[in-house]
Image 1: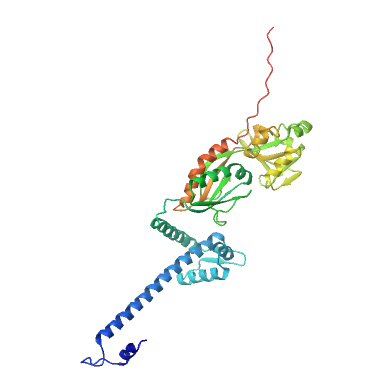
Image 2 (image 1 turned 135 degrees about the vertical axis):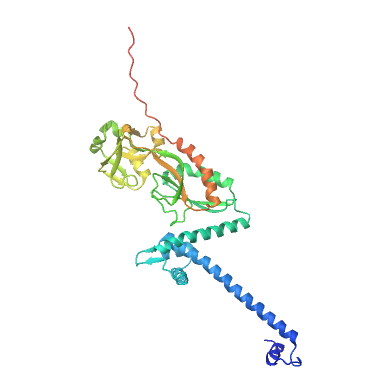
Length: 363
């Protein structure tokens, strides 16, 4: 404190104002009020920022199902995440998570609050992009996932074309022969084969594929061609576990879907390896039609039991449900969908030609 301020603090007011300069006192009071106001609003602003951070942490814990996983996503530490959630629960006076040694799950109140929290952060993100003039411009990092073989065949050209058209976007493509949890694994868009059990994602249909049985011409020449599903019991089966998780093959008989338990001699968790084993004569394998199109066209494999093939399964682009879809996600889906439809139509195996019946020459 300055000497004049100390002097004024010691000097009481007099009716004549002889020992105090009224103007200086008023200036000091005004300065102090301004400082108090600044501190007050600074605290309130910091409180708002803390609340937004709490919402972000809360949503991450809810989506990943754990404090440690949320810490990895947010590049923080588990203790910091735990403290933030505890502070949020204390401020709201409500328990948001059920905690056990193995599991963190939302309470009923936590589930209701999650919807509001997502909407608040989505609106904030939209407002920031709008103010920055980027609400309609795709930008940022886009993570895409797809099955391994399908991703190798169709995604390089599609993603490369998308990047040329959208220079402000970067991408990462992850190929897995398993169903990924888009939210937990931080994935923006997935290319999926099959029905979608998860109702919390949005899907864009881009095609369909079939499960087919194939074997090499050499194998069929040596061991014969099965004429009915029951004949498979007499053959060597090669199983890709991603398509036969319970060793069950679903086939169609008329309009009825039936199940048959197979006993494979060779099981493997890689689709390409199972197909390669069939090509060299190791037996009969089940594959998705697009995976063996080239082998069938080049006569390295032959499709068998076609009349019993099960119904086609859809291929879809999927992304997490949100009231406001990020421009980069919407742009990729709009760009990729028609190109994937064209690519998948080109991956249909050729129809097997029926043998011609020789015609008799008239006498």
